Length: 285
Image (cartoon, rainbow, N blue to C red; front, side):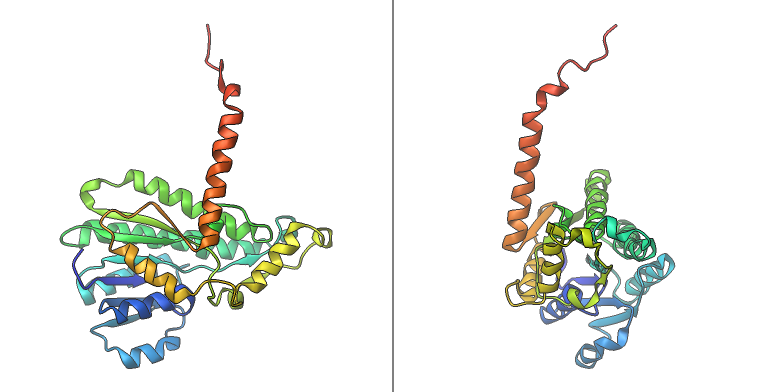
C-alpha cells in the first residue's frame, strides 16, 4: 500500500477508535475520523489541520450518511487505504433477562451488525471502484466474544458472531484481483471506555448464583488495571494494516489467544468424537 495511508475510522470518539485515530496521526498518516459527537475531538482538530485530519459527524445506523462520509473522504484525500470498522457497544444481559427489552437489544444490533455491514459494503466499493490502484485493508473490530460465548453478554456476543460469519463469507466472495484484505481483530479485555457506554438490563434473580453473575462482575472490571493497554493494542492493529498477507483473524491479548485456542480445541474434539455419526447417511435406492 502507498505510504502514508488514509484511514477511515468509525467510533472515533473513545476507546480503540480514539486511540487508533491518535496513533495513525502520530505515524504521519491521514485520518478520516467519524463519530456522533465531533466536538469531543476538539483537542485533535486543534493539533492537526484539515490536510491531515477530517472529522465527520456520523451515526452508523444511517446508511445514507455512511455513503456520504465515504464520498467526502474520497473527495478530500483521493483514496481510502484502511477502514477501521470499529463503532459498537455492549448490552449486558442474560438471554432470558432480556425478555421485554427487545428495543435495547435491537438497537445494539443496528450499530454492531447493521452499521458494521453498511460500512463494510461502502469500504469494498471504495477499495474496488474508487481507489487507483484498486485495493485496501478492511479491519473488522470484533472481539474474543466473536469466537467464544461469554455469560451475561449473550447479545453482544451474537452481534460479534454475526460480524464474524459475514466477514468470513465476504473474504470468499472477493476477487483476488481487487487486492482487498480483510481481517477480524479479536481483542481481549482492554482498558477502554466500554464500561462507561454499555447498557445494563436487570438480571433475573434466578441467575444470581450462576456464571452469569460472574460475567456481570467481569464487565464491571474491564476498566481496571488488570486488563491490557489499548495504546499498545492499536500499535499492533497498525502493524496488521501494513502486513503484506494479513491473517483472517488476529487475536490480541493473552485472554483472546487462550479463548481462540480453547474454541479450536473444542471444535476439533466434538468433530472427532461424533464423526462416526455421519457414516452411512447417504441416500440409498
